[in-house]
Length: 231
Image (tube, rainbow, N blue to C red; front, side, top):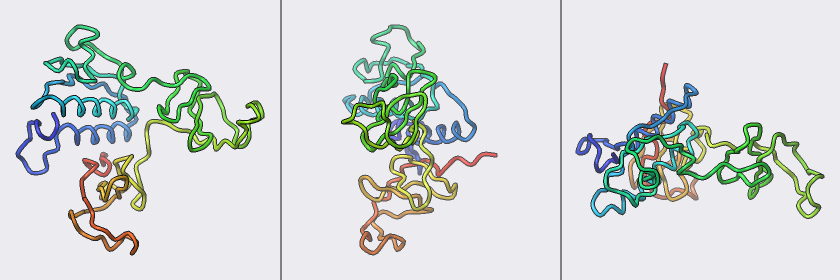
C-alpha cells in the first residue's frame, strides 16, 4: 500500500509501495529485466478519492517506466478506480496488459511525443522539434523533403523512449526521479525543479545554488534510492 496504509506505517522512513516501485524500476533497468506486477489492490482508503487518484498515478508510472509488461488486479471494493479493470472484464486476478490502462503506443507517422512508444515493431519514436515526434523506421537529421512544404523544418532525430536515464548531480531530476551517483538521492526544491543531493533539510538555503536562486528547499524525497547499487 501507499505510505499511509503500508505494513511499515508508523516506522521512521516508511514510504510504502510508492518508494518500493522506484527501487524496482531501478533494479529492472540495471539488469535489463521485464516484470509483471501481481495483486495490485484497489482497496479504498477513507472516502476513496485519494485511492482513485493514487492508484491511477501508480499504474501510469508502471506504464511509463517501460519495464513492466502487465499487472494482476485484486478487486476489492473500488470499482470506480481508474485502474480497476475487473469491472470491465470480470475475473479476480486476471492478467492485464499495461496498454489497457495507459496511453496507447502511436502508429506509424503519428505523433509519439507524449506516449514515446510505437505500435509497429520496426518503428522508433524520433523527435522533430520540441512539439512533434513521429514513429518511423529511420530518421535523417535536417529537412525531410518528402513532407509538405509548410512543414519542412529541421528534424533533430533524437530517439525518444519511456525509459529516461538517471540524472547527473547538476541536472533536474524531477522527471527521472533517480540519480546516476548511487550516493545521492533526488530531492525536490520547488515545483518543477529537483536535484540529486547527498542530504537535504527542509527550509534550508543551499550554498551550492547560484546566488540568484538561493531560496529555501522543500526537500521532499522523490526517489526511494539514488539508483539501486547491485553487484
